[in-house]
Length: 157
Image (cartoon, rainbow, N blue to C red; front, side):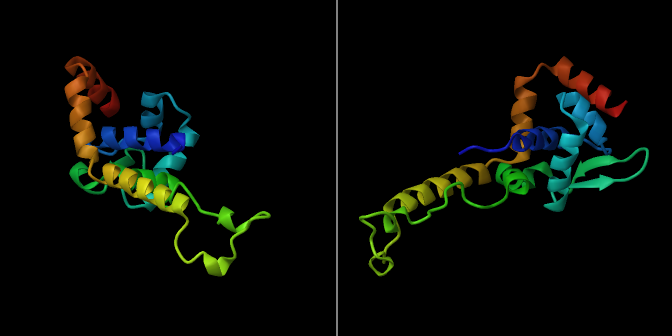
């Protein structure tokens, strides 16, 4: 499965926003992650349309999560940015070419499609059980405290 880079940026932004008590400007998030502000704004818009973040307009405006980070899953972010469609789409290859199986004989799902569907469901379930809150806790546990403190101060400046 290949996801767009927007998923990574969206996840990082959600982790940062999980500890925000005031709106964080999109430009600050872009600068923090060294990514184009225009590119990141598109990802934030997708997260907003999905109801995961909300924007506050004005000079002191920015983004906040719409609900606790423990209620937003990694899958929520993936689907907000890349969409909910499965990674694999069966095109019924078995019905093509010189040895094509007639459509009326294809009364069971294609075995390849079935395997890919099982894998997609397992992948989605594994992302559904991890929350942004859990990711944020891992980031906190694995990042030097002084760096986190500096980041908090920098984001609020």
